[in-house]
Length: 355
Image (cartoon, rainbow, N blue to C red; front, side, top):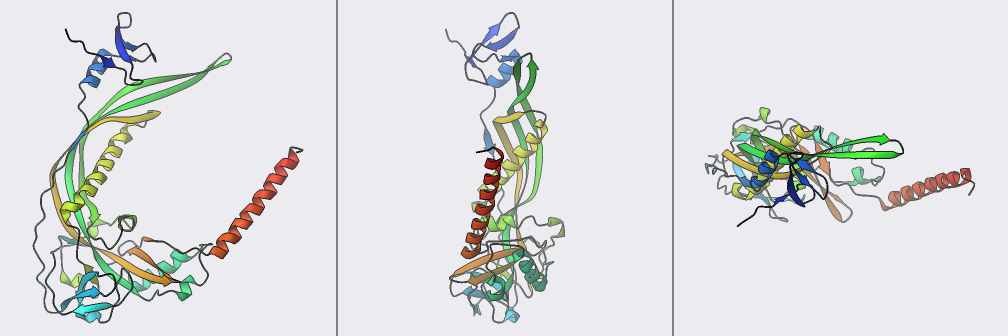
């Protein structure tokens, strides 16, 4: 004869049925659960994710003879642009480009977000970005190569889908009060079941290895309501990077962003509980579609000392990101100042205590 053991969701000990309370009880931690809740726990399916994407069309852009390919002599980056650009520099590393007459086309974007921020505005925003930085070397702005600013359309894959999700959470409500000389704390445990549908449009994942995801994600978001269909006129005067990460290799990052956003959406419905943990999650994605877009970005590679610093700015919103150098002299001076102030405060406290 076989038997079934029911485990306590709070401590893992065995649950037994109490004839007095008509509930399943844990003798170890005192948890009480309705029979229906225990059945729901025991029948819960393990977490799973079913996400499939349709393939993107490989239609290429039909360009005229004014388009050429630029190849960086240093890092090997290859981008496209019109011949009117003349001598230009690699937006990724700052070294000179070599213009190639041959152009073999590029994938036609579904969307293009035109530049809203001019080069002059980008330079001013860079200067503002550097202001008020106490550890920044004083000669950084004056001695850098800020004039080498390049407008670049960066390739992004966009993912649309609908997600049907079922979540089971463990929730806790903690109540505390005082009884005589005792502080009493009561913790109630709950099984929370949530389900529904979440729609996603234009979840972005960059399609280039030239920029790290920490940069491309930091300058988000892009306002997709300003996106338009492809028109070669938008590329005039700018460079356009070709994707070197295919859509299928970007799907895992898209899936992760979708899963995190879905969980956050359902977790937001449990705000009344003191603590909530995910017990299981079942996500089923449908109508998955992949789009291709070119997003505007101002890029500059700044040489300072023996190091190159890469900065990026959202060409639509002006959001700016990048790593700034630190002056060892200023850092040391700040450390000494903080240490001196801390010593004075400690001395005052010790004096007040009579130590």
